[in-house]
Image (cartoon, rainbow, N blue to C red; front, side):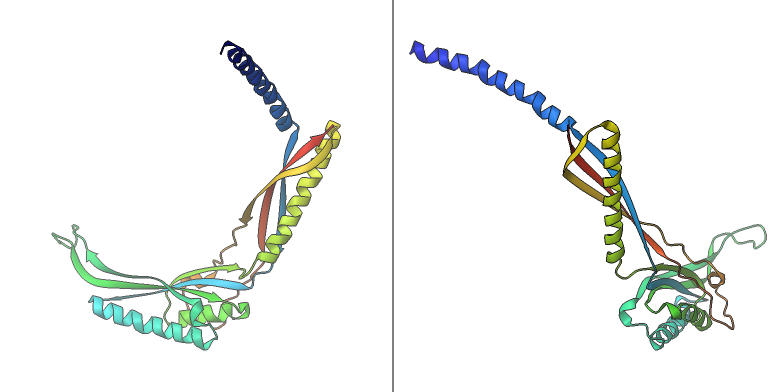
Length: 242
């Protein structure tokens, strides 16, 4: 009985000592690393435009305002389809019906707010895949009754190729930075132990030309698509060899 106690008691300090001695080794391994950030960007011409327009109508009754709005928006949607825009690229963004009030003031001698009419707004989001039609579609919409909106951005239906290229450039940038830092520090790069990424798209510049005033013109609204830039940032962790 007494012989078995001493080995157990003796083993506990040995085990604790071995665990403690392993901790600095792990910490040293973590210290022998370098983390660098690489950035890459790729630009590509847009192949799709997203247009947001609205029809707003006013009348004495909500029914009359809604009927007038429906008539104008139906004409706009029919014209879009005639221009080759598919139903899947047309989406109603919101419908609002709001009363219009006259509020008390010294001139009108009103004692309480009074409803004098109603306003109905209907918003439509349109994806235009043929960029050559953007100006014509916008101008025709205004002629048919669109009187608010005009938000226009250019984007890409499938930006995967540009994103892949941006990733490659970001990784290359990280490798170049790591090599420069390692040479300056007099060490050698080891294996890559971790890579993480963040992707950003530079916000496209919204078009804000004459179209936002919603006045029909004799010619199509001039627009320029420019380019979209996709940015990728990577964090790469390397082991260091002495």
